[in-house]
Length: 331
Image 1 (cartoon, rainbow, N blue to C red):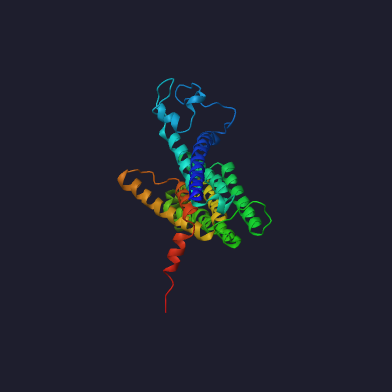
Image 2: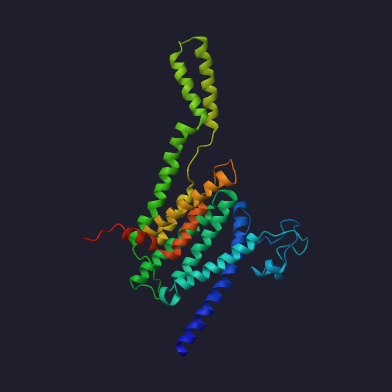
């Protein structure tokens, strides 16, 4: 009984510490989300009110609690402070608790720490993509580094070459390497090959008109006034098309993100994450189209991929294995 109480107290301590440490890290993640896209320093600039510019005192920088105490308003000017700051901090804390509950350090060693570091990168990328529709390269590189370090430490731990345990739920290096290229490769093909070809053939009005003008030119007599007019129109339209930015279905950020996710979680979990992302994005797209009446059909896909990766960080291969089990037929 004393041993059970000791284990309970130890778990409570770990969870409380994970939450408090998580919300502190979440406060730093808010800084990364806001400043990195602007190229601002993460260290030298002091936190300040975005409305009046007043420097925020240290006692008002306590993660989660300061926002609640101030009721979401600046102490100096009373301007509202976005609840997202508090939500990012709280979400980071709860995710840290979830990681240490799912993967106890006593069993998995360094893995929960590395997973928390990986999730931190996902949180920053998620909100940066929501705000700017792009992901900062340095954070993408960070997630890749964490994934590589996790796999290397996992291999060394399994081989008995590491004094500290780092047990990965998915130990197969082969699965990780396949996962690294499975979803990211599909995104690259659809985003940079299929989407531009489809857009040029069926969507781009300028290129449709250019093809029509060229068809008319072939039917016109050479040297005739009509042919000269068509040539002028074709030249003008060609110049306009050359100035247009190419249209891609996915950005390189999405591709690098899923490569890092595949290396971190393996092929089955990564495919599951992509499947979850597609479903969530489809629902959101329907909402934008029907409910919100939004005419702009473009939106960031990265946050949905990140939601999928965070989910599989906790469920692993469970969904994929459950679906694959339905394919077996007992005889």
